[in-house]
Length: 427
Ligand SMILES: [Zn+2]
Ligand SMILES: [Zn+2]
Image (cartoon, rainbow, N blue to C red; front, side, top):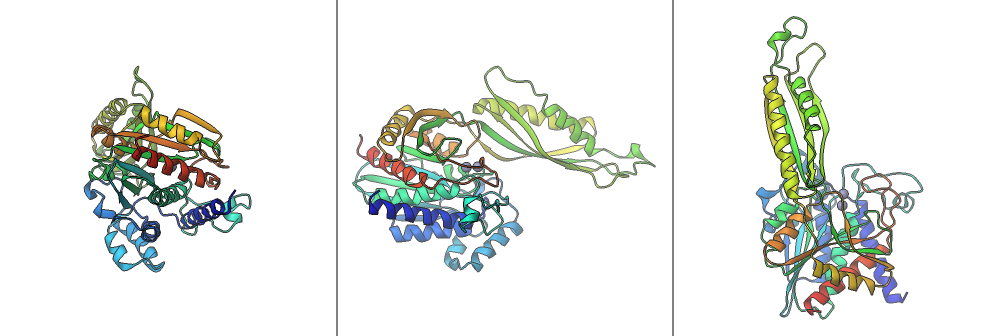
């Protein structure tokens, strides 16, 4: 390793560890955004938009309540985030969009996500962030590698800027991926409508360090649903007939959600992940609540599940003389990675130091709201690919022992930056 490469690696590692120490969950990435902005100002970009300046506020999904947003906002203020910048992120409008304009050429987009998860991080000495002193200090955790993604975005911008890239590069540091809440808001801002090519990226996903997937497909389209049942309370001993039992409506709904028929066209999923209801043993429950999700291997299959789920929820309420309020709390379509872009990324990856295996494609099997932006670009005649950068991760994604192998940081930056550079050269 040359000393220049070693210094570059150390710089990326330093950045990633900073992000790792201060993870913030969806729509609360104030401090994270501020650090990204600081770095973008150092690099020097032609346009720098923050929060509402590039986010379609009404298209945001799964936004936490004001009190929760305020708590993280004040933490960011206490950590010394600049007041002007805080103002630009007011109301949980987090994230940033950086643009480089460098001569005539295509417009290329890069999407990285920046949010952490609301879960505690392992304190075990076997867990590298704990052993080396960069474990989370916020109570949340970068348990999906979005700390590496933010680092990829910054590293790629700088590398592209210092290359012979000709064209426009737009890099979005997207908030709220984990609640599938931010992708739509970025897509609907229209900022990516003029993109000829878009790359999105994820680390890990069970691919080891040194492996790159040129284009991931097989995203399950997903919809999060919340259903609030309302009934009528009554004394369970004295007057059970006077009540309208919301818990019964819930129980009927949960059983029948799982009874939605499978579909011949492909994979479907349903899960009533959170339920609660009632207030006391001797009161007929007048309120119950389900938070669940449906998925499908295509957007159509997800719609099929969503329609059936809604009918089940409404019919279950009716059956027990209750009312139900059904709301869609977040959703994302499916998407495919375009072949020509996959080919180029695959070629670049094959020539990148540190890469020993290149897979043309693989299935994600989960969901991602980058699909909104990918689809938006494809609908406007552009191409898109979702790149996988392998990393040895001791724990699975979303577990307390998840960690990123930092050797994958320079690999991700090189693959992305070089792909973007070559797209501008029409190679
Ligand atoms: Zn995740
Ligand atoms: Zn993730």
